[in-house]
Length: 124
Image 1 (cartoon, rainbow, N blue to C red):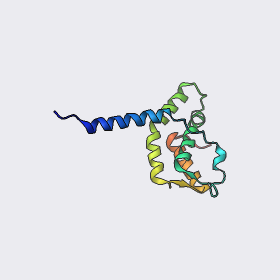
Image 2: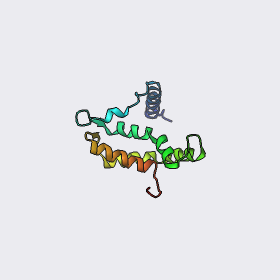
Image 3: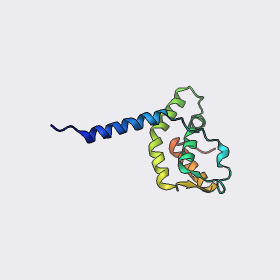
Image 4: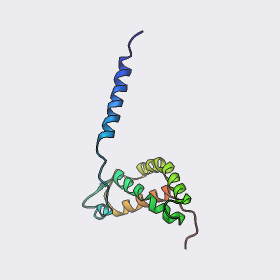
């Protein structure tokens, strides 16, 4: 039987990548002020999507009317986590890779908020 050299190399490379990814420092959190002047300072779509997904706890609190730590709030967070990959794919398909205008940022934000935390209640 021949030694599976290619398989060993591929698995080793995958393990090295995983270890490297786990040891690098996490990126700094993005502040809302980063999105104030997008025409002069555009942002990558992924950065905007990350910021919106960071707003989910507040969105769940607003949507459920329940404080953090309650069952309703926890269920909202779990549902949002389950929908996040599909919402990210939808944003990648629909919006440009570089967000350079406030209109695109607004549309991206609203689309993601509605996808991550859908609200089906009468409007006041």
